[in-house]
Image (cartoon, rainbow, N blue to C red):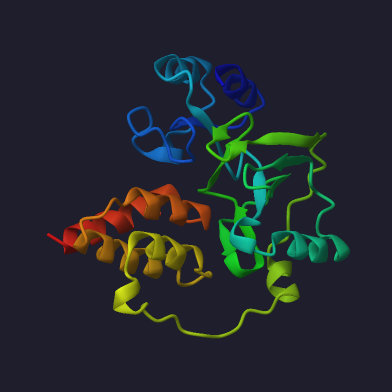
Length: 246
């Protein structure tokens, strides 16, 4: 893991340690999560000396790559959506293809300067400025991240705006779940079903319910990270929920 993390840093990508077998930041090394990512070889070596089994997080967006996450968990149609993107000619800029432990894909693009976006119902999640991904050879209980194809960066960013053109978004308002369904697993699913414009609101609502139940907030934080919320926003929202519950 240390050697791979150093190799990413030498390529100019900011990296940071994740908890072993997890996608969550290793908090005792990087208390600010992805904001603490670095290319300093001495800092990275120290992190992995402290925790040799730590997984690797790559900060997405300049100077690192943008990453399109194609999700197939829970029967999400990521591969079908990907085929539509391919047919529309939107995948020409892919310079690295990574298989994720769930059987999905991470497609690496040159950074375009944009932020994070998610369309959970399409199985598509875009990580740009302020986001991060777990990188090979990171391992989770479901398996390892594996590079399938690698090549030179052609300098063509991914056009997320075209996703909204290909898949028009229905106009709707979300509503709170029935009270009998307010268990932690349901709250995680409630967060991952978010679309742009409601992600933070859903996270805050779910976190408030979890605080009321005295439940662990970490699964909610992981779900929010999966749908593209930056670490600083997740932390701020969870703290607001905890403060409201005091």
